[in-house]
Length: 384
View 1 (cartoon, rainbow, N blue to C red):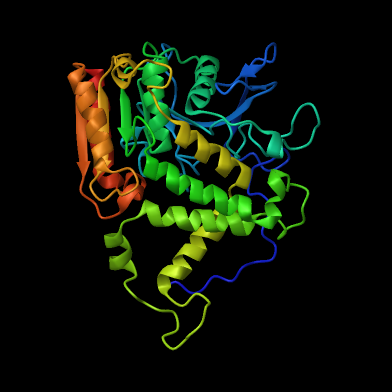
View 2: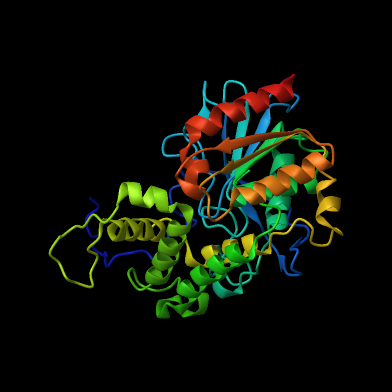
């Protein structure tokens, strides 16, 4: 059973990485400063820095580079101990670092070293906070393209991602069709659905309703006085959408922490589970970044400004692996089926992976034993 989680009074106002914090395995790339970085929404950033990590060695011709793109609350630490895809990245693993040079960067608008709301605004020296603009998936990809240039990667062997990471991977195939040799798109979509946008709206409202959010300018607050409660509730809400009823029922059923407690406090085991995940996110993420990245996912629509979905996808010229999870209620298989069928209709090679798992949307992170070998086989076929 999961015991009730006491709420610490020393919760940080932000879980963001900030200058002066330990660097860990992060490396940094600074985009050129001779011109502003213009965003799709019309705003611009004077300086952009991107945090990234790499595993393996880049060949002299740059032909073995693989870009892994993270989901909403992920970061650049995909591989290595504690990495969110640790089981897939490393020597002898599906993304074999004896063979591939694997790269993962924190996205624009994030909070783990790449320029985002918690970063210093060059014009003031203080965190951007509420003044940080809305960014898009396309903006994230443009930052990644600059990183690729800096690393000497002209063409990615593959660009891989799940959920928001899959959105980025798909955009790579459309925006830079000559810079990718293959794509892996897991539990993702060509456009956000009304239901996905609705859940996102609820999460954002939870954050913004927290009086300690202060309109987004909370970075000077004392520990425990930040918008932890709103971010915690947003994560709890999202966590429910990331799993399935089957997964929750099998793990928790109606298990209780205290069988005789008629109380408004956490009594059921599943409540303690949600509390735990909510507080865990508060310690490693930033409320403003949550809002910006969440909105970027809502805005995702590869057909925007490109005439139609067919016209947008016609720019994808490479083999694509599309993976879906049968129990995914947030990004249901119908979305991946539509993406697969549209690409097949255009004459593209598509490898479809059907993951039979009760774990819901999070299965693309959990079911690495199923997904990993299929990714490895697909990447090997690109070598042939």
